[in-house]
Image 1: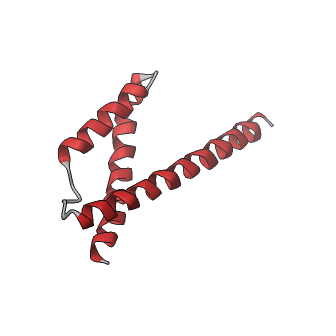
Image 2: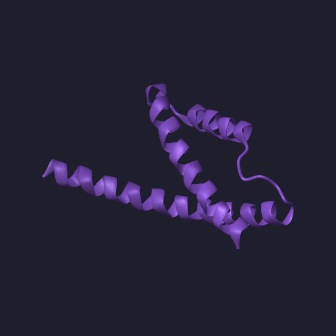
Length: 89
């Protein structure tokens, strides 16, 4: 029974994560339109480094730093894909 309870809690956390990712993707779309209008590049290596460093700084348990780095690499890759689709419009 304990396992079911923990899984239920994870499901609720996943719901929140998806809700927040969707909000992030909506902002990424706005930024993509801005970049298209102003002929700006999608990729900004320094910005991505700052984002990851900032996110890692939010961690209470720094042992998770590698995982946050991995997750944000994927999130930002997805966001660049979203923006590339906007640029191609």
